[in-house]
Length: 174
Image (cartoon, rainbow, N blue to C red; front, side):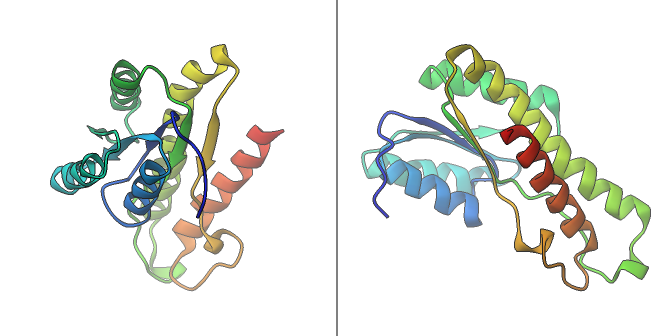
């Protein structure tokens, strides 16, 4: 992939492993300064930051539960203090959910996924938009799932949350 994002500051949520780590590493290799958000995987986030630094890139690890608005505000402030701004948010953090047939889900299971997923999107977007809007610059990227359009058995909570995320993204883009 050949992208030039040298000098951009990108916050990737849920970046200590999986898709988030791959995104953070790729973005750093393309020249961005990357904030690697994690919830519990501090060792993995630290290792990724070390890998980016060893390759000549700039990165920082920042712990925050993206469902907690105060923690997200502190995270955004730390990134801005370190890098001066946030140019891109990659809203990637996945909120845990049970994989079970709908009949076996409680409302609390569904509500937890919906509230967590949409709360994370809301909290992170609000925090970075306060930095982006005065500069009239910035991008929001929401990592979703094909399950939002083509749901599968056992994924009711996840599919509903990602479909809501997709809908909010379309509204925000207008």
